[in-house]
Image 1 (cartoon, helix red, strand yellow):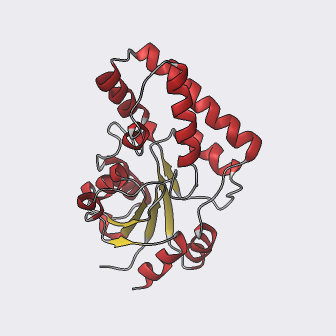
Image 2 (cartoon, rainbow, N blue to C red; image 1 turned 90 degrees about the horizontal axis):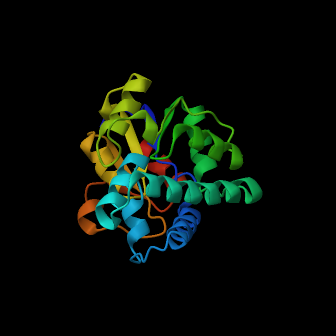
Length: 218
């Protein structure tokens, strides 16, 4: 592998310890809509952008666009209220890794399925002040994760080839996205483990973000 020139981060569940919060908010919104949902419904949604999430509810629950808009607005509203009143927790090792990347002139990007504007607000709520070189939101691409487009768009925006970068992900959809873009991926487990066949698509596995430093230095 060539020298790593950029680290491309997922946001929820990777930088921010927010998947637990989102799970609670989405399940509350679903209950408010009278949905009887399966225990693994939220896990199916992790890593999907808004367009793909709507398609999921349309396919599995027969939702109209109006019904989905109402429910997603409720879920996002609950999440924002949590972030504004309580702040957002940051995953272990992020600040150590961020300091290392700055000192070694390694570029950074965020590749998230959330709206780009929401990502910016979330970093403010989490007191993350180090600027990222580029943020690719789910609203910035035609095809969200697990398509490779989000990661390819990030590498292109940084002026780099895919093999100049590594991605850091916690979800099946995210790992598949990095793999489809031809980008080396580091998997860090969040609230739920992922299937072995998906985990096998990630070249590395780490316990926390600070351990990514060791991988970069190999």
